[in-house]
Amino acid sequence: MSEAVVQTRSLRRQFGATVAVADLSLSIGRGEIFGFLGPNGAGKTTSLKLLLGLLEPGGGTGEVLGAPLGERRARARIGFLPEHFRFHCCLTGRELLRFHGKLHGMRGAVLERRIDELLVRVDLTDAEGRPLREYSKGMTQRVGLAQALINDPELVFLDEPTSGLDPLGRLLVRDIIQELRDRGTTVFLNSHLLGEVEATCDRVVFVREGRVVRELSLAQSVGDIAVELRVAPLDPATLAGLAQFGSAITRTRELLRMRVSDESVLPKLAAWLVGRGLSLYELRSRRRSLEEWFVEIMGDGQRPG
Amino acid sequence: MRITLASLICALLLLVVFGTSVYFLYRFGPGAVPRPAFIRQAQLETLTLAGLYVANFLALAFSVLLPVDSLSGEIDSGVIQTIASKPVSRSTIVLGKWLAFLGMATGYLLLVTLGVVLLVRLFTGFVPPHLATALPVLLLGAATLLTLSIAGGTRMTTITNAIVVFGFYAIAFIGGWIETIGALLGSDAARYIGTAISLVSPVDAMWRLAAHRLQSPLVQQLPGPFSSAAVPSAAMVVWAVGYVIATLLAALRGFRTRAL
Image 1: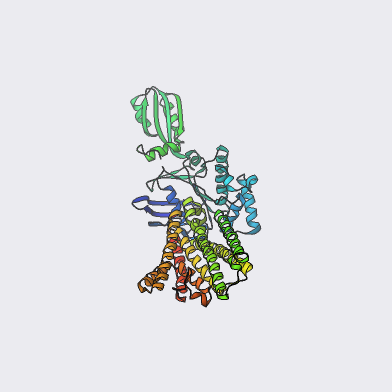
Image 2: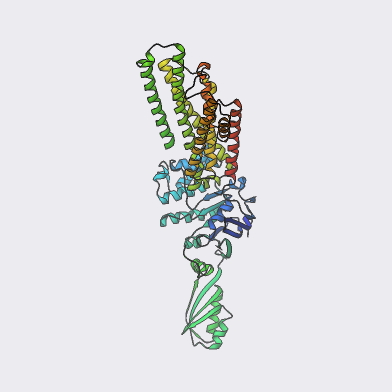
C-alpha cells in the first residue's frame, strides 16, 4: 500500500454503556477509494466522526494526513459530506458554497471560480440563486457534495453520498468519484448501496460492532469465484482430483459446484477434465457479489437495520 | 431572522404605544398643567424609567432568544458537522457567534432605549441624567443573559436552554425585589439573600444600578417602583464583567469537548 493517509490503532468510543466503536484499526493508502461497510448500528458513522475530530476517542490513537485526529491543519485538506447534510436554509446554493469556502480561508476570484466549477460539475448552475429550502433531496445532496469538494481536498469522506439520488444522480456521483481517483484523491466511502461500492471502490472493510471483521480487495482480479460444471462420466477419482483446483465441492446429479480462488484456475480445470477423457458440457463461473460477501460476513443472525 | 424581525416589531410597538402615551399626557393631559418643577421632574423621570424598564426587558428577551437556538439547534440538526470539520477551531465558532450576537443585542438595546429617551425628549424636552454611563450597565445585563444562552446551547437542547436562562432572569428579578424590600424594611437578612441571588444572576442588579444612575439625587430619595433603596455597588459591575467572562470560558470549554 502507498503512504497511509488514514491510520488508526484500536480506536474506541462508547456512549454511556453502549460501545459504538470497540476496536477500530484501519489503514488507508493515498489515492485509494475505500469502502466502509457494515449493518446499521455497526459504528460506521461514529468511526467517521472520530476520524474527522467531531468526536473524541475514548481510547486508541489515529492520524489523518499525518496529523493527530481532528487537527486543524489536516482538516484544511479534507472534505466531508455527512449522511444527513443540513444547512442554513435561508442561504442560496452559491451562498452556501461561498460560506464553506470562506471557512477554508478561500476568498475573492479564486473562491468564485471554484464555486462556478463545482456548480457546473454537480449540475446546479440554474439553481444557484435559489434558497436551499426550495431544493429537492437530490439537489441538496449534490450541493452538499460540492461543499465537500470546495477546497479541492486530498481526502474526502462521503457518508451515504447517493442517498436520495435518482439513477442519474448516482451516476453523477460515481463519475465524480472516478474523477477524484484520477486526480489521486483518497475517498472514504460509507454506503449501504453495495452495487455503488462495488463499482467504485478499490478495497472495502466490513465492520461489525465497531470492529473490522474482514477486508476485501476489489481492485485486484482475485477472490472467491463460484464455478458450476456439467461433466460426464463422474467417478470418485475425478471428484477427488477436483480438490486440487478448489474447495467446497458439491454434487447434484450431473451438476458440480465448487469454489476456486482465481480466474486463472478455470482453463487449467477444463484442460484437466478433458485430459482425463471426460465430456465437459458446461463450465460457468461467477464472481461473488459484494452483497453475498456482506451476508456471509455479517452472518445469518444479523437482523435488518 | 424571524426572531430579529419579531423583536423589531415588538420594539416598534413599544415605541408607538409609549410615544403616543407621552404625547397625550404632556400635550393635552395632566402633564400639560403647570406644576412645581420638582414634581414635574419626578413625573418625567418615573415615566422615562417605566419606558426604559420595558425597553430593557425587550432587550433582555432578545439577548436570550436570539442565540438560544444557535449552537444547540445546529448541533441537533447536524449543520455544525460540516462547519466543525472545516479548519476553524471550535473556540472561533463560539467567539464568532458571541461577538455577532453581542453586536446585534447592543444595536437592539440602543434602538429601544434611545427610542424611549428620544420620544420623551421630543414631547417634553426632558433628558434623563447619566445616560452615557447607564446604558453600558444595561448592556452588561443583556450580555450576561446572552452569554448564558450561548453557554447553555453547548450542552442543552434549545427548549431546556431557554427555560434555564429565563429561570436565571426570574431568580435575579425576585432577588432584586427581596433586596429592595429588605432595605426599605431594614431587614439585613433579606438584603443579604437578595445580594447573594444577585451574585448568582446579576441581571437585575444591572438594571437597578442603571435606574439609580438615571434618576436625579432628589428623585433617588423618593419611594416608588424604581426605588434606590438597594443600589448595587460598583463592585457588582466588576462581578458582572467577571461573570460574563467566566460564562464565556465555560461556553468555550463546553463546546470544545462536545460530541458532535
